[in-house]
Length: 257
Length: 308
Image (cartoon, rainbow over all chains, first blue to last red; front, side, top):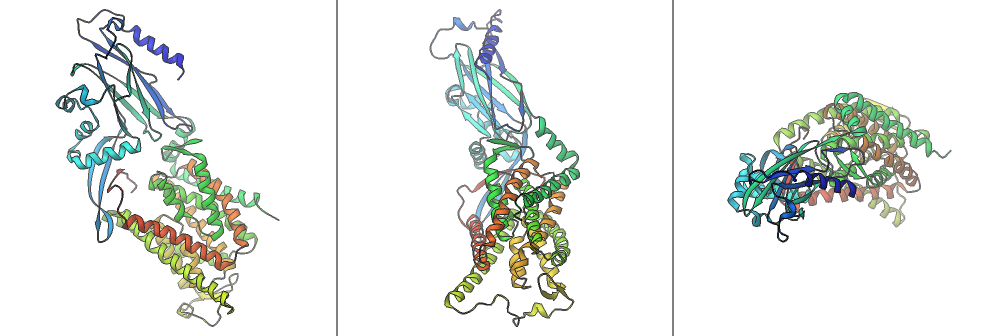
């Protein structure tokens, strides 16, 4: 992502806002820096920048100073079923004694904002709009009702880099114009990542918008994945033959007589 | 330099993997074991899912044990007849082991059972090897002439019927304990996801009195055959063999195995057994720690996999 490309996208976002005002109501326009993330053999996590603008307000008419708008960006990756287990000492050994299943939990979940969430909206509003990691996970399924297991899941996934809640990842770089940094982890699952953006003004929801980013495997990575699933036996034989060939090669190369 | 592993679905530093492959390969070549008991836990520690780790390590073991077997073969240090007899038992053991694995999984607590079987096997074998080699070295230090092969010291094993002569190893034993050892190693290998060389080598030495000259080459042939079969089976049924991960581990593994085998030639057998015993015991203690010590976080999260 070059600086020039960033500037172009910012200009494009700004251009969409030089339109007639829609009867006082504001609208949100968002665009990710890319709509496709390719996982090739050199993929080690990546960054997608989301640009957004508030439509219905001429950005340069706004007074300078504290941002009059707040933005919360929620990025949700493909879902998977997660099992959280709790260990306890049983007869001297630590064994799993209890578990909760989180059906269709997001494999990736980032809640990004320009300020701490509790400064943006009241708890009841955040709860009903499902804003914040805990509120998203709590809305999942029956198994997600247990607050202790939920906190453990969020803690572990955050440490792993799959979940994140950041109050400084959205930056207003001009009045009415913002950008958000979305960091995709190295072990991102393939699929559609939904980006949901909510605009708050004075603690109430003013507008919302959204976009998606597709993550997919390409090139040799895609080739291997397909070979391993479609021609499993042949793939296994080829890999094993490769192992034998390499073992033979090494014994020839390092032969000493 | 990070490289993306297509089946594991994550990226890892290629030099970490190469280094891991080389050092485990060195140990493998030196002691004539596959090294799965080191490699599988280490990969899981690096964050690779247990299923992918077990499946991909089998190809790595195939490569390094084949390279080891070839160099022992050239020195005529392989007893092919003995390997085939062991393999006959081993294949039956692998089939029963997979069946047992499925039964244990249905009961839940599979992880704990795998951990416990690692713990019991590793500490038992490690302690046995350590004490035996220490006693041997102590005897030598005292000046009494140690005898590696005691012709008169026949155990009950030598009283069994159906005796067969294994020329290369210069032993004359019943086929029953040979197949039984192969079977036992096959069962444990399938449950623990390892080749079982570290179990096989001491059993061949202590029960069958196979001389140290042929034991490692023979063990390498058996390990290579069972692991090649395991790799194909894992790929065909679970789709969990990561070709890229396997290739990197192999490249390091075969190189390390050659240097390991060479280093082993300059060492006295009892010292080798002492070192292997120490290593096996260390891994066993590591498993004990995991099972008995209080974990930092009592909670763990894992995706619900079809595999395990």
